[in-house]
Amino acid sequence: MKDFSSKVAVITGGASGVGRALGDALAAEGAKVVLADVDQKGLDAAVAALKERGTSAIGVRTDVTKQEDLNALADKAFAEFGAVHLVFANAGIGAGEAGDMWDYNLNDWKWGFAVNMWGVIHSINAFMPKLVEQNQEAHFVVTGSGNGAFLMLPDAPIYTATKAAVQAITETLYFQMQAKESPVKINALFPGPHVVDTGIFNSERVRPAELPGSGEKASGISSVDDMKKMMEQFGMELETTSPQEVAAYAVAALKEDKFWIRPSTDKSDEALRARLDGILSQTNPVLPNVL
Ligand SMILES: NC(=O)c1ccc[n+]([C@@H]2O[C@H](COP(=O)([O-])OP(=O)(O)OC[C@H]3O[C@@H](n4cnc5c(N)ncnc54)[C@H](O)[C@@H]3O)[C@@H](O)[C@H]2O)c1
Image (tube, rainbow, N blue to C red):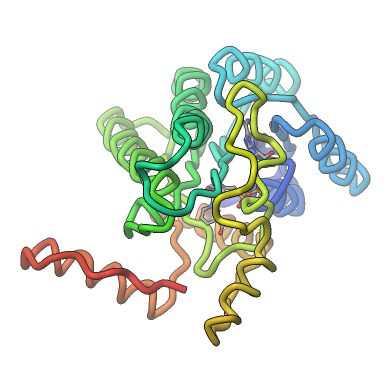
């Protein structure tokens, strides 16, 4: 899509981090923006900021773990603006896992899959039939992660597993749509190339009451700053990417209709290549070094 002006973009997880930055970047390109998030306060603040700059924007409180919420979001977006041209299935959480996976609280597994994987499935179910029927140029963009899609990080098995599933869903959706020769495109967004400075390390703020954790956060990391401090103890420096950089990269890549929206570094490419080489040569996995 070359021109975003007056196009309608729906973004789940739009109240914070990458989602909020995507909303801002698309607004700057003249798009109308529908932000969806479970965090009502964050949503109100993000929508107010968009409106202040003159963007047509609405916020719809949406829990992506619920199909009925996504259906209501799609209905609201089409009712408000008459069409939808960009959908970002972006909401995601990190459950803060650490230690042996067999010790994890089952609620952490359930929460991770409910948001990261089922959220994408619910978004596909709610929007794809409408986009296909609309038969106009549109993008359905799934936020995955290099962690899971490309590399297996042993410190985060739940997150990694959810994003591996998300990648399989995104790529198979791409092929299904290709077979239809529809104007609806599928794109895979991988925020990075470094850790993106967002609220994901403090996902506990939006943990549902029905899936309580074990109290003290297992990883002890609740922000990118915590992560930086932890790495400093080992004499390492953590490089970060801002959500605004991710959004700018995504908007530019969508203009070129790239499926792989994957900002990379030599180091991240090397790690991916090493994994693929290991699979092809049937050598045992080597721990990826991506930080
Ligand atoms: N931060 C990174 O380094 C990084 C790297 C790769 C991929 N990602 C992915 O980027 C996406 C955005 O995350 P972020 O880093 O901006 O984190 P973030 O915490 O800043 O934003 C995530 C948003 O999702 C919302 N959310 C959580 N549960 C929800 C639910 N049930 N229903 C609706 N909304 C919900 C949160 O309220 C929040 O506003 C996620 O899919 C994440 O996995 C992030």
